[in-house]
Amino acid sequence: MRDQIILRIATKVLVPLILLFALYVQFHGDYGPGGGFQAGVIFAAAFILYGLVYGVGQAQMVLSLRFARACAALGVLLYASVGVVALLLGGNFLDYDVLAHDPVHGQHNGILLVELGVGITVFGVMVAIFYSFAGRGRADS
Amino acid sequence: MRNLFAVAILAGIYSLLSAGVFTVLDAVDVAFTEAAVGAGIATVLMLGTLSLVGWEAKAAAHRPFLPLFVVIFTGGTLIYGTLDMPPLGGPDNPVHHHVVPRYIEESPQEVGPPNIVTSVLASYRGYDTLGETTVVFTAVVGVLLLLARFGISRHEEKRRWRRRGLG
Image (cartoon, rainbow over all chains, first blue to last red; front, side):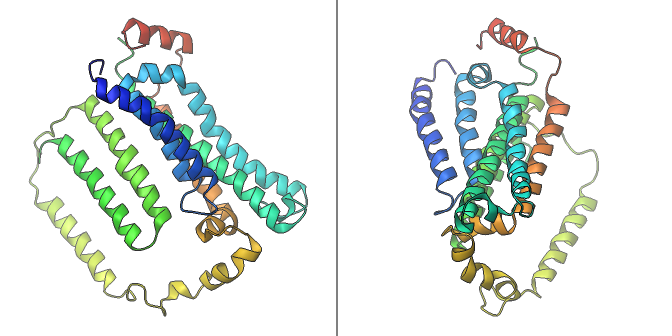
């Protein structure tokens, strides 16, 4: 889309706003609608929009498939490790009460970390799936 | 309809409309997900797939009567199933009497977040959400095994993109 100047400029303006909105949805999910899953999808949508307009090759230079793959695994790992840390601190698996000095703070920390894990995984998964669909059959010439 | 582009766009519009329905039903978190995944990314992935396999559906090689019968039968069964359901939003519905009162009354003290959906999702049902995240991860493992080109180094990948003038 080298000649689509309006799309290109609009994308450049929109991408940082989409990323910011995704972070808002991620970290404000306790208070309003949203959470890790939605935030991960929106964060990935910014890169997908960039890839659609500027080409998947350009998008992969910003964020490689390898990195997206690592994110997908890292999120699940973060989620499960919160559970294991709770086990080690003497609680049940994924019992956040023991993560801080009092239960409500512990719950808050636990939910924040767990939602972050979900967000990272969903972001990595969406970007990796987009790359493998959109990049297929074009790069290998 | 043979034009698959139109089918993909219609599916996206359907998804966006159901997101509106979820908003009307006060399920804002679900509406959010439906709009972002169903209307956004799923449509993009469908279009990406269509750009690989072509935009026209092939003519069916068989008569449409058996599929039509299956669809009508399934639809009829589902509608028959809804006849038994309690009225929408009724205060005596079983869904409002199992664990929901506990969530509404206790979760601000027990868990904290004002958004009860977050409390249920991440804390009360944290184990289920771990399962869901694992399912999402497993999905990408499957897609990558089927579609990604392993064995090509990152450097080689970039070199190929550059050679095609896309990088």
